[in-house]
Every structure is written in C-alpha cells, then in structure tokens.
Image (cartoon, rainbow, N blue to C red):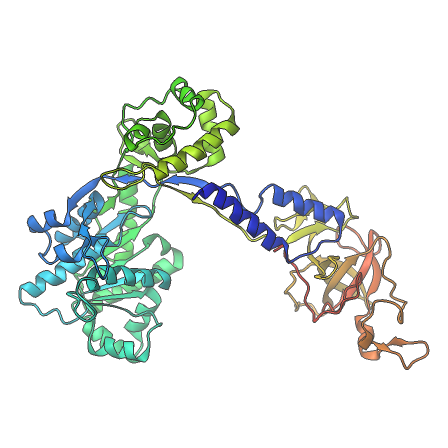
Length: 592
C-alpha cells in the first residue's frame, strides 16, 4: 500500500464530508472558505516518523538460565503466540531487560520510552515472575499481587488482550499460571461476583475506579480491598497524563493504597517523554522527582529507564551533498536486496535526519529519537539544501524511497529496513467569524477572537448559515432601549440566557440588497401558520408579531443606526428571510 496516496484519499474524503453539510450563498464567504481548504487549514502536512531500532537485550531463555526469571516464563513469554501456536523464543529490548533488573532489586522505577517499545512487558514480566517465584517457594499467593492503573478504559481493554495472549494462549481458559481480570465499571454481575470470590493475581483498572474501590462499600469493593492486602506492585501506565489537580488526586490515591495495603509495595510508571530540557542526567532527575511525588516513595534517577537505540545503516555511510545528489540523479534502485539498499546513502540520510539524533547534540551522545519530527516537505527542503536539487523532485524521491525501504525486509529478522509512520492531524472546521461590513469588504477568519486584528472598533461575530439556501446570519445579543435594539454584541449560537434582562438573544441577517420585505404578509416568506388569512387584509397572528424581523442598520462596532442594512430576528430562528424555509429553531453554525 502507498501510504502517501492513501493519505490523499482520506483527506479528499474528509473534505467532501466536511463540506457536504453547509451551503454558502455569499460569494466572498464561499471564496474565503475555498481558499482555507486549498491551504489545508484543517489538516497540516503529515509528520514522518521512523520506527527506531532498539538495542537488543537478553532473551527470556537467557534470563531464565541466569536465574533472573522463573522457569515457567520460558513458556509464557514467547513472540507471535496464538491459541494454536506457542510462537517462538522472545528477545527483549535492552530497556525491557533493564526494567526487569530494577524490579529484581526491589526498586521502584519509571520507563520513559516511545510508542511501540514494549513498555507493558517491562512490568508484566517482573510481576508474573514474582508471583511464580513466591508460589514455587510455598506462598499460595491467593490475593491480588499487582494493580495496574490505566488512564483510559481503551488502554485497559487492550492490555487485557495482551495478557490473554501470554497467559491464556498455550494453557487454556481457566488454566492460566497467573490469573488476571479487569475492573473498570464495565463488568457484569457475574464478573463482579468472581472478583469477590476468586481474586485475580493481576487487576487492571483506572484511577477513578481504584478510588471507588478504596472508599465505597458497594459489592464487591470491600472484598477486592481485602484480597489486595499485601499488594506487591502498583503500576501507573502513561504517567505523563497525571498533571495538575488530577496528578495531585492520583498522588493522594497512591498514598492511600500504600498505607492500607502495603507501605513497601513496588511502584512502576511508564510514560512517553516527561521532560525535554537540559542534559540526559537533568531529565532523569526531573522525571525521578515527579515520580517520587506521585508514588510517595523514592525513585532514584538511575531507575529512570530510557530506550537505547542503534543505527540500522552503517556508521560509515557517506551523506555528503555530492554523493546524495548523484544517488538521486541515478533514480530509485530497481528491486534492490536488503543489503544493497542498506548501503544506499539516502537510507543513511533518512535514518539520521528523520529518525535519530545524538543526545545533547554531541557526536558522542547516545542515539535517541528525533525530538522534532519533520513533514515530508520539510525533509525535502533539507535534502534539497544538501544536494542543490529541486525541492519537489526531492519530495517525490523521498516518498518513493521510504515506501521501497519499508517493503524491503531483512532476510534474518523480517524487519523493514526503514519502517515509518505518517502522523496526520485533522481539525474540525469549527466556526467562521466576520465583521459587520458589506460583502467583499468584511473581514473573515476561522480563528476565534473578539476583534479584527489591529481594529478594535470592528467586532467579530459568529456566522451561521441556512441549511437550505446558505444565507448567512450572525447570532447576536441585542441591547434594547425603548423596545428597539441599540447595540449588538457577539453571541455563541448555543447561548440563550443573559444576566441582563434588557439584553435579548437573536440573529442579524445582512441584507444590503433589500431582498426581504417585512410588510408583504400574504405573498412574502412568512410561514403559513404565522398568518391570519381570515383578516382583511391578511396579517400576522398576534402570538407571532413579536417575532417579526425588524429592519435596522449596524456599524462594525455593533452600534445600530448606521452601517450594514439588514434584519434583526428576535429570539429563536424560525424561518429563513432569504428562502422562506421554516426551522425548528436550529441553523448550522460550523463549516463541517
């Protein structure tokens, strides 16, 4: 699959979808919106990020042979395991092995590594080993040994499947060597009953549910707390999400857990980047300080475990401008072998300019992920600067080379030479704002603000549109004096109440051409149920007269009396003054 072409299809489909909900009648507004979409205002260029190559640690078998893991871990932790296949021997990343060794020392630790680095194994393996070891030494381990806290139920459900792969596959349901369960509020009565009667070894939950477990007396919470006495592991996944007041709440929760279940339990945190300033030592110290506050237990900087990366391409690969330019002029290699493409100068350039960088900016620094991912166009601009070639040609070549490198796999490991991801962010189109000035002169923007930049005498009002004909309207607050609006202020579409009784909500429709005639009752655009046809001549029914649109002119600062001519519609929007379609009070406010 060509991910770049796929991205274009997704964006095109999204644009068609987002624009299908609104009609826009005014030419200047329609042209402005067209320009915003052409400029890709709502979907910036995607970021290109390489999947790094982690330095390998020992195998599970090697750690078992060294006495660091229980014998049964050979069978539990295997790669590519399925219900029908026990898979193959698993080799860990170095940071996973480092985490296992920290747990063996009884130290609380934090693992700060990127997406796809296997963070969950860095705590599940030590937990499973600890349970198996204690059972082999005569401890029945009948209670909950580990509680793992996730910030979202989606993550919890995902990890439940991960545990099933290792602990159920190869053993069968009900025969797991180490048991596990989820308790997040999604469980049935039967599942809660099982938690009370047969506690799992590992409990997956979220911090809100753990707070409830610790405080309320509803079944089965008291039983769960009783089963967790002597808890040995408390894991906080995605540690960086606990900030501010939520971080303080979680810190207090962890302290309650420690005081009630085990003062000496081992705390583990996993996270993406938590600190980005200073040297590597500074960052480790900062993370250790944060973790210590959250855990209520000392986390030493040495136990802040980071990922260790290595190059795939050779260190001696030339990346000078002349070599790169010659490679690009030669075109894309046709059907290259893995070893051939590995030696290609563009492969080395991509890895070291888009994937990896030296920590602390020194040639001797540790290899880490690129701190600031680049878009494909930014990468092409860098390559064009290095080679002196055209940016567009460089962009095309980079996209084709990335796809080729992704599909070229190592014959020994099956791993892509350069596995990469596109990160595409898509924003909802949101609201449109404009000044109260004539069409073609009014200032339009999709950036929420109070005034036109540099002109505080020109207020920005939200724009909404009739779903049938696309006529624009401004939701407004109308300050009334002697029964007449004297000033408009901007109003959000959903706002209906105001603390000042003299301020009404309603809508203003610009009508410089005078297309609506409020006096034409019988042949105009009023809904039929508004009109008393029994009167001569027909007139508006008494209960609708107060909703009759009022003609007035409005200046850019919102003062009435002069400026753009139009109509004030008091209260709820009931019919369009341009096409006459009746509404239930709703108009479309956004561009999506």
